[in-house]
Length: 114
Length: 108
Image 1 (cartoon, rainbow over the protein chains, first blue to last red):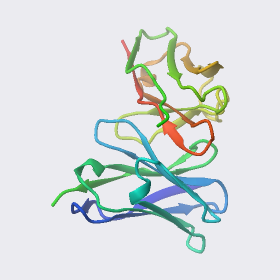
Image 2: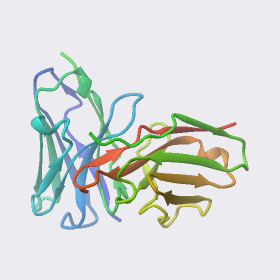
Image 3: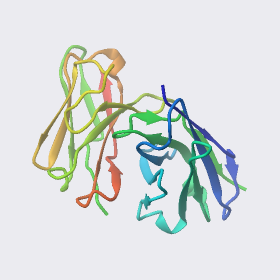
């Protein structure tokens, strides 16, 4: 069965760039759209953006100026970069995919703090 | 920006029926999806394309659509159904995805 796993630093300094990678195992990344979704502590879910294996992307307009999502099909991975982070970007970050979001990673907490 | 509106909370007694609504102007054009999230866990898809149930999801979970409102219905609620529920859809162009604010289901 397909599994997703997020990886990356759990602590990022303000004004720096948050970088996360999602590894897709048990299946090919060359299916579905793959998304990043975040959830601030105690709050709801926010879609950040998605990428197709071909490289086409779409981003949440509220984050578009700071977000880049890329894909590496040779490694079955896709990645998130969020620039100029502030404390408001502190959240659990999930990677997800599938028809609707049938597939989810376990999530990784990223804290923005000096 | 496009928004989906859910009630913040719904409470029901065990065995009763819980209905959680989600409203949005583009829902007549775009499918809705429902997710269940328990504390400390990733969300789980419980309904897709308005009313389809993924394999492994109990039959007591169902979805329906009427105009600009979609509804998640949980029949014969069990204690284990206590969770946050989120609807998700897309804007009218299908370009941007959006989640509702979430509804906390409390089983009394």
